[in-house]
Length: 163
Image (tube, rainbow, N blue to C red; front, side, top):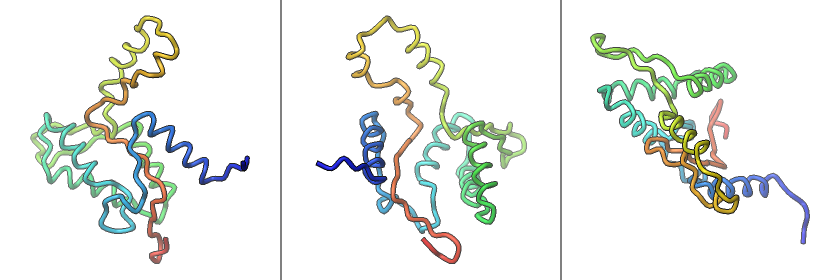
């Protein structure tokens, strides 16, 4: 029995732990995308934006404009682009509507509206035996709009089509 622990074994162990928590795992080659420079699962993003902002009347053109905003961050300054995207992911941002008569939308890339109720449920719960608590599915995994996936081994083409 080998006691060595490689990067691949660590990666697989983490993937299995996350799968046990209900996260879907995809191998990079199986991610639906049109080219190797596409790093966003556009169908998932489109579905999320349409469902999350449907009450606000978001249009397909606005969704397409948002997707373009995310996918055209400049690769020339990767640090700044990553910083910008992380800020959008963490804090959201204001989006100007195509129809100026409509109120601007505050776009959040994660649907966190359920978290206050989920946290209340966790902290207001009666004491549950540890074994039973570990068997209950976490309530934060049940939001209908978030599509969280684990993707590993995703090949991305960079400058001069290098992968």
